[in-house]
Image (cartoon, rainbow, N blue to C red; front, side, top):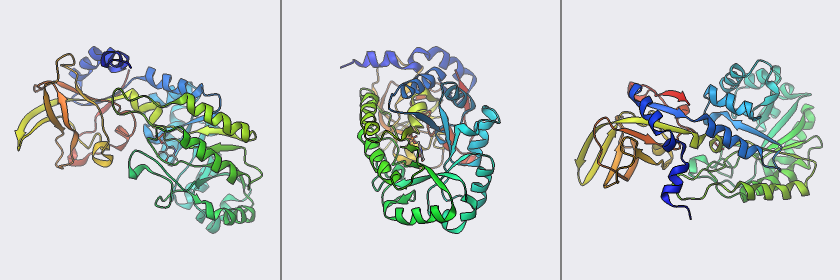
Length: 384
Ligand SMILES: Cc1ncc(COP(=O)(O)O)c(C=O)c1O
């Protein structure tokens, strides 16, 4: 069992503490991304023998340096909007269409027309487009997103399969899908599913792959099974990381059973979450109703995950990293919402106005979900 000290030694932001503190001298609030960590995470996924292609879910973080780092590592891109496609194209080059999978949901007709015109591989996740606009997909190769009928995830809002989710074509609609595809004249070349986010059990992808392989048997042109993203990242120290070796082994079994299909993964969080930290400054402290509060210079406008998903993010006082944590405090921002809390009942050393506070594992779904609520500024992004 690694000690707390051993775990701490491995954290990039502990090694780069003085660099982060000098950045904090120049920026009240900032997201800082460590590109070595991004490259290392990409290497971990790319080394899985059973995975033929990795697409980064750009929604997790569309920072240009991150996109470039992942592209250099051989990762391709899953985009859910024309804006994300434009971002990837701006960073790479105009002829990178073959590296992009376009997976919108409930998008208007003209987005599909545009994507096909641009030569992008398109995923549909509903029968509606084939039923109402078959001419758009005639003679086209498409992917179809299936709802494998069960979902998983770290919070109900991120479970993206199963009866209560808006995503995907249900298993009991497959007969109709076959009819619609044939009458439109399209060819289904890939079957896709994304069952949820923040999943720590590797068996999830084996089950998804098995469902997709069975569905794929109904479509003679299928070459790829896209098993989606969702690979979880432990949010606390001491919790073992995702077991990629077991994932590889389980997907290897799927490949042995269905050798005709290439297996794709579409991670977002896994590639970028641990690479990012949010730094801010202590503004004020307060004791009220038996609670101690530490106020910091940005709030849920910068990082909405704790308010939206009850997400846990480690919080440290970077200025006083070596000082013993003797206080139990709630860390709050300046936004006019009671939910504007980064962490409740956290152990921290006594905080002083101006101390630098670091919120860890914020490289995914952090900056990309930020807003100007209360007309507060969005933190800058800095890559190191
Ligand atoms: C279709 C699709 N693929 C991949 C992902 C990435 O998920 P994660 O960041 O949990 O890996 C998502 C997230 O919502 C998604 O909707």
